[in-house]
Image (tube, rainbow, N blue to C red; front, side, top):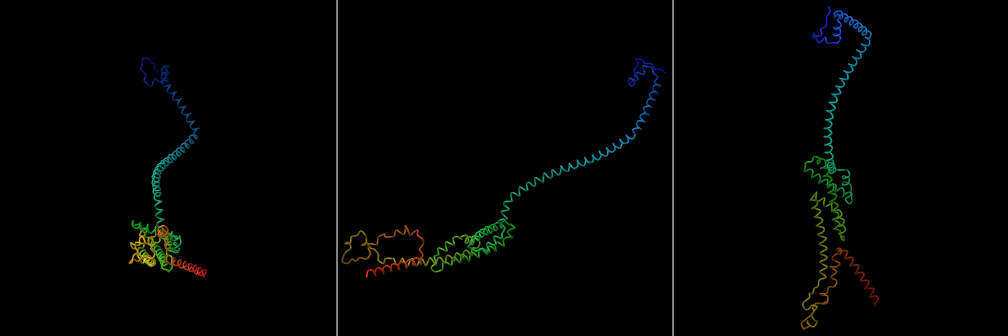
Amino acid sequence: MIFFINSELQLPQDFEDDVVQEVLKTGTDLRQYSRQIEKELKEVENRSIQDYIKESQNIASLHNQIAACDNILERMESMLMNFQLDLGSISTEILYLQKKSVIMSQQLSNRQLIRGPLSQFIEDMTVSETLIMGIMDAPVTEKEFLLQLQTLNHKINFVKEQSYKEAKSCQDVKEILEKLKIKAMSKIRTYILEQIYKFRKPMTNYQVPQNNMLKYKFFFEFVLANERNVAEEICGEYIGTMSKIYYSYFKSYSTRLMKLQFEEGATKDDLMGVEDTAGRGIFHKNSLKNRGTVFSIGNRADVLNIQLEAPIVVPHTASKVRVHVSIALAACCGRSCQSAE
């Protein structure tokens, strides 16, 4: 059956293909054309099968490569997933480390702030071996003992202050400080009393040991601050000793001054402006033997100019000087008498 194309007919959309339109225009039998096309397709299919058969090894190799790639990609996916999880954990750890770094930095700053006061506290609280040896073995007159005594006094006051704050470390050093204080107190008491007893020796210039004691005035300050009973004992001994010394000195001065006192007193008739004839009469008698020296200044000004600032006079020393002067004058007088004969 032959189909003729009518230009006026409306073709379906599938017939708008160029090949179909060409077949319709040439008047070709469609069934024959269909069988021909089917035959060509069969031939193409056979050739394709032969090509597939020829490339079967390559296809198998390609399949294996694709499977291997698929395994590799699967492992890579697993690795990337694990890496993503690791990155998440690393990010969390970084945040944790940042927070910890801030905390550690704050702790370091706090430790640096407290380092100075804490070091000073430990130094003030610690009782070193040097301190113990200085208090126990060093003689009182050595400088080492004085330095260690000042250190001991500072530590005693510091521990006493910290005990009010209920510092537990005070209990660790309180006993040893108390023993050192007792030892130092005993040595100081013995030394000061020995110095005071030196004043009681006859013919002793007490100013020398007094000046020596001034070098160790911190000893008495330490005793007064830590043991008032011992300080009162030392004060009592010193006051008693010096009272007796000053009493003996003033008694000697008073005795010698009484010997210099005039037994006769000046009257109105003994004034320097009165004429010698004014007091003469039958019942008048001159009462003063040395009238000219009653109102004269003499060497009294030396008391203000020289003797006021002069060192204290030690009685036994002055007595020795007077004896030597008397001997010298007697010797001079003896030589003068011999020359006159």
